[in-house]
Amino acid sequence: MTLATADLETLLDRAPAGVAVDGFRIDETDGGYALETPDDEWHDLDEDALREALETCEEYVTNWRYWQESVSGEGTGRRAFLRWCEHAPIPDAHGKPTESLAVPERYDALRDGIDRQWGQLSITARFVDIDEPDGERVYDLWHVDDADSDLADLEVYDDPRDAREIATYDDDGRYRPLKTAPTLVSGWAFTGLSGADLVETVGFLYPATIANWHRELRGNLDVDHWTETAERQTGIYDVIDELPREAVDWMAEACCVDSQCLRRREWEYDEDDELDVDGGDGPFPCREPCSLVVAAARKWAVLESEDEHTYELELTTSELNQLEELIDAVAEGRTDEIREADVYDGANRYRARYLRAKRIGEDGLEATQVDE
Ligand code: SF4
Image (cartoon, rainbow, N blue to C red; front, top):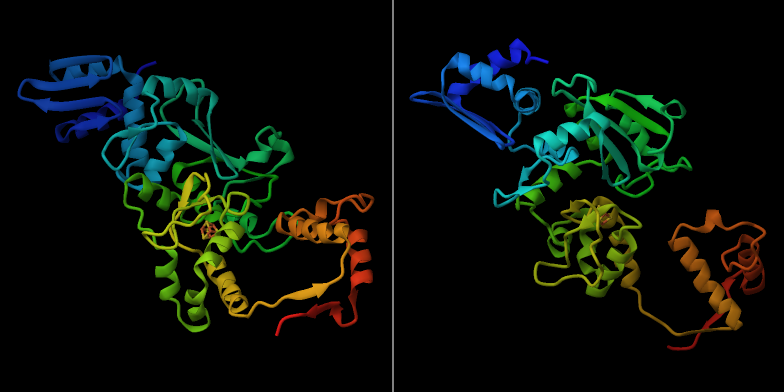
């Protein structure tokens, strides 16, 4: 296969300004052109000799055209993300490349498709034309749970804006206030997206994750810790800076762990005071307490302002254990999974109703305050 004339002409147009991507370089020199790939070098080439030499490194030429002409945007999060999709080197904060696949390895892999996971998203980068690749890539996107599904069994979309609707409700039709909660519905696919459309679609499903991931990669993620965020709140959220220090730990454990949110929490109580709870392992960072956490913090700030008391109530040991099981089942979102017949589970609906019938009267739980 010979190179497309248009590719060669575009490349020769760009050569005087210098061409460089993925170890492929063309420089104009006094003696003509110098051409370099990771495997070979040519010097003092006139235009015809350069054309001839370029015919021997077709993969590098089409790879150059894809990244420099189709994608472009040097230094942007969009470009870095698309390169991450195929394990192409991306410069980190020190200019050192992360990821490692060289062009020939990537070309081999892109024929079959390269799979990557971004939260609950499975992304496949592949060539448009698998038999005679001209360097153009497209991207398929679906839920990780559907990775082995037949496309015919999925709802197939191609407009990034359709992702908004997909991200709005969970499997039970409940609104998802936190888009990075691990509750994204499955059963859909976007196929054959351009790079720009892939980035836009991911942006609807997981807003700002690409930009923040890229900032972190470049070493310039600006983190706003709890105290900064809390102190700048006004109006009804003004109270959240009164949340006790230890309650911020409990809050992070309640909301920010991997089971509840796929962002990796990078914010702490403040710059010199780390929270005890692990920030998680998500691929994309969380740079500040989100609106869900701020809204919940308002409630906790009010609750934590109440005085504690000692109460006396009568429970059997099993009933005490059952209270723990009930709280645990609700906290883990497990109540829907507990079968009605499973009366051995303390959070079973009949067990809970029995406890309520026995211990919670018309005036509520029969507990007596024993302190002043
Ligand atoms: S603050 Fe916590 S819950 Fe909110 S996005 Fe960040 S990690 Fe997720």
